Length: 76
Image 1 (cartoon, rainbow, N blue to C red):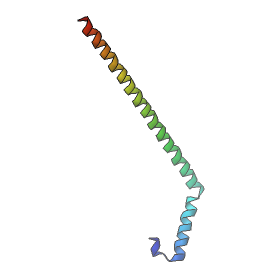
Image 2: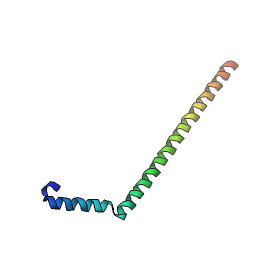
Image 3: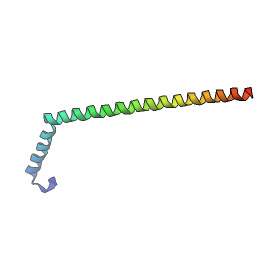
Image 4: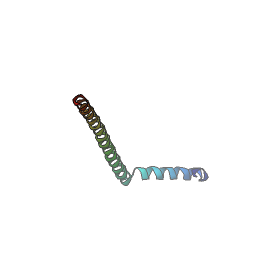
């Protein structure tokens, strides 16, 4: 689309885009997006830890059930 604009206008359009990206509002938006991304990453990390903890508990329960089954078999 910028190729349809005369060269001097292309430069003006590009500098307008650069200026909009350098605005304080854009910096605020970038900070908000960064904070949101970090919050999401923390939630995923907590979820992964919880899932790993759940697997550890499941493995522990499985081992307890095996031990209980061995004891039951020895008693019979």
